[in-house]
Amino acid sequence: MSSHDQSVESADGTHLVVRRLGVGDPVVLVHGSGGGLHSWATVAEHLTRDHEVWLPARRGYGPSDVPAGTKSFRDETADLRAVIEAARRSSGRPVHLVGASYGATAALHTTLADPRDVRSLAIFEPPLYAAGAQVAPLLDRYRAAFERHDAAAMAAALNDVTRVPAEIVAAMAAGVGDRVPDPVEARRSAVGWLHDLEALAQDSTDITRWSSIAVPTLLLAGADTWEPMPSTMNALARTIPAVRYVVWPGQSHFVTMTAPTVVADALRQFFAAQPAA
Image (cartoon, rainbow, N blue to C red; front, side, top):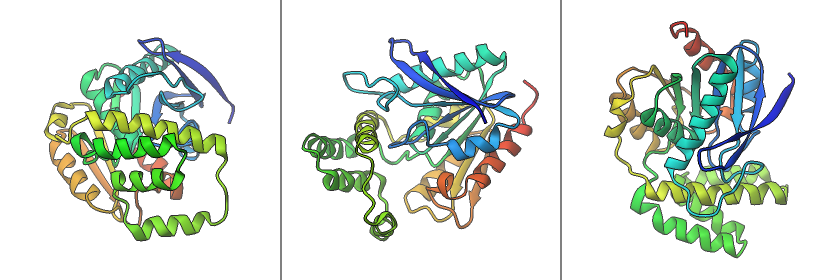
């Protein structure tokens, strides 16, 4: 499937690189922390038969700009608005907005702030519990480790943010084995995480604020994801009025990588169920 990368300018002049592929109703896929243009690639391939897919690299993640200063969800919202508007102009149609993990939190913020041109919202496991004052000391720990290029200390701080159980961390490390990550990609991911943590530290864990989201919403979760994610998703499902809640047995927070066809099929069914744009 042919794709091309283009630049979209956000309100403050930040340039975002967006990969575009496929034809049809527009879908914007928002990546999580540590991700980038590649994050949704396999899911996107399954959607391109009947959708024009837009894959932005969020600010802080190369090849998009990494602006100076502290990032906030206001920045993420302005950026996603710019991408949504570009997709709307290109296709003449409103977009299906999709986010995973931190990208799902960014998609929630964007839809709440400005639902124009958002035809539907699909979110997978936004870490709404990882926000506010509890994240601030972890951000400080991570920043100190980042500045001294201490990958192990950075990873330990992130595990305390995401609350991944120790046995899953160990299994993932064993899976990687002796493979050394590409240093450029590792640094890009580390920079992105730093800025995501800045936004999370300023955010709130208040779930009731999402009750005014009125667009059709699909909430996706893996039955095997660790607490407090399941409790958080159950609370969110009770909060958003027009929500459809799907929990996949045997899947966890990594489902977009481990079972991309499951994700793509759920999205395509949800998009097809929406009224004509």
